[in-house]
Image (cartoon, rainbow, N blue to C red; front, side, top):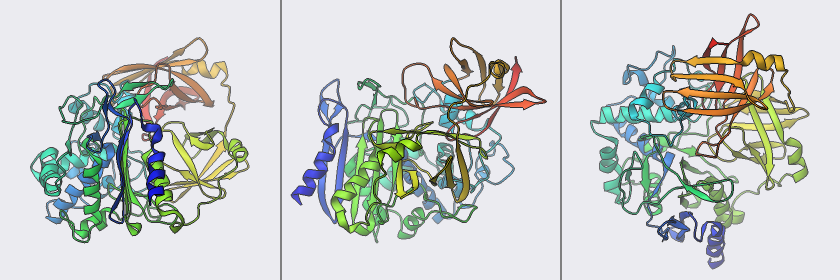
Length: 531
């Protein structure tokens, strides 16, 4: 046992010292194997992280909001299959019903408001009011896809759910969480913190790692609620996790928690990996459940392997930590050969052959693969390691994805949410000057209150985003005829991997507009206003 505890401690060595780090608690079969803080909660003052340090848990908050919704469903005050527009009558009519069940399970097709903030020229650090966020969410009349068609992570759905819970529950999210979860479970260090200007005893400073290895303070300018605003400690998260898998939970019922852990089926008939505010997270044949969270300057995750009575809570006050991946390494150390064998690691030379840029023609989506430190990484948009499920089959290792990729002679055959997809290699496109000249001009999307202007730069086209919330300049790189990827020109910030894809829309051979896509928003329409 001592060797296991030493191995776990060693796993987090890189987060110690005079730098921001994390707090960790690991319990196996009722025994605490590790409960420790690494690095600094506040580098300025030299305050170390301890298990009592309070840290933002980000999207782990979603399961708490879902739990409150299920309490209201149990009381008959809310319907699982109610349409969201029943409670938000000012939302656009999408032409199809978007239900409470859809938003709980990330299959709603709603546009992602955090990406829309970036598309409007700002970022998550910008001071943006709740009213401005609400206006953005209600300004897009189109869905990304038909509800139930695919899994696409969506904070908009959980924000709307939070507002519904407050409306039907008759109180603020802060008070509802305190009354129904935090107080009865004794989670004294947990609370909702909508903005960083609130005073919270014991709260860590959050940090962004810079390209040179230094750190800057992260900050959150957008008021958030049930989609990602709770703060907590590893001890409190263990209490919540234990209640969730208990035969006799202190809050809630076994039926509610079974429902929360049950994923829906897509329209294709395939079962999703995302349940209700919780992600199915199996590893080496073991059933796993949990959720991660990301905020400007922090990453967190709480994961359980109920059959093996293993629970892991990791709260980081730095953004270069990967709790999902670390939880798998912890399971390897603690459970060892009680888990199924892992597939043999792919050879470095084989991974290098897969590096490159790919295009999904049916959905007009690009994907870039690179090899970093022996790992295959998808890095166009959110950066995600690709894990080999079995020889010749890869899947995103972190984040919330329902995708499998199988290399072919010139790309990948894939499945996404049970639907077939195909990616072809497209490396090395050089757009003719005439095509680039035709892209020059201004484009407008009224819902974003944003005007985009494409102009000539010294060595490439430039994109100037001017919106009601901010402005930014990006460089444009052509990857196919009439398709450009935008990349930031300035220093890194949270969302620095934000890389929208611009697709020129032609009518009668002339450029009439743009379709702009991000990881979580597809084909937002911009009309051309001038050339």
